[in-house]
Amino acid sequence: MFGVHSQKQLFQERLGQALREHIPLWEKGDLDLGVATKTLRRWIDGSNSPNDGSMKAFLDAATHIREDFPRDAILEAYQATRNGKQYGSLEQDGLFGSDAYDRRFSEWCADATSDSSLMIFQNWMLYPMKFTDEFVRAVEIGATARMLLLHPKSDLVTMRYLTTDRSPFSFLAYLEDMPKIIRTLGLDTRRNFSLRFYEAVPPFAAYVVDDKMLIAPFWARHTTSEGPHLVMSRHSAFGRTAMEDVEFLWRISPELTMEAALATFADALKHRTREQFGER
Image (cartoon, rainbow, N blue to C red; front, side, top):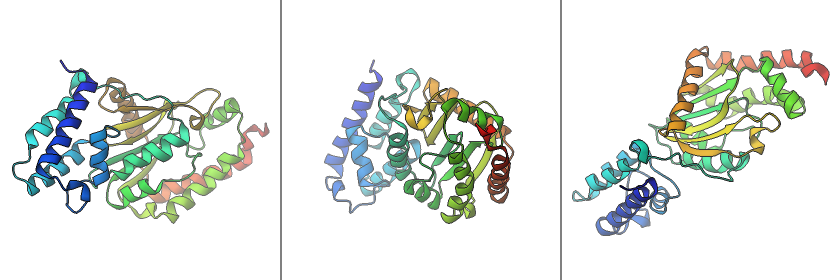
């Protein structure tokens, strides 16, 4: 039986061969293949993997160009990389905070379609305190995007700053800047972008695009931007469990209008300015 790596290699080989034999000019970029040419290159070289939506878009487009395109063989090889125990966690080493968010998450967002589902699950967005251009573009084309953040008035915020020994003024800047950034980017007007706040012990940070996930633990002494991230599939055993936690916290967090969500930042800013994190 093929291992996960062999199954992935089989998919890469079948895809590359099918394109060479049936659509030899595909790399010129003149044809509508459902996904970007650079995306197909990444599938073939193994640096990225398709999701169900992008694979369907590609196969539909390819068979429209060539009726004899081996759709079933490609789909079979693709599904074999995702079935049960053969689908590994895709863990990778050395992918640290800003590199994970700025590069890997952005790459995934760049490949997102209008049918994609995006999730940012964090304590708060300090580093980098922005939304990447690729994330914004994905929202603009219609991808569903959810952001779940620790409630800024939670006592857990204070505890995190005490253990990581960071200046509380960066958090005050976050409270002031986040609503401005959301409004400047026009995310507050997008019905497919939603924001909620959870009140529970935060288990990890996660950035999700369709079936691909970045996960980083909340260390006692380090921020997530200082530590390594794991890259995995939400369909792996670890990924499924993690997403069950995220979806649970999303469901129990109050649904907010965007106006109410942004007002939460302003209210917390007044609270935190008075409290000053215990004036440590």
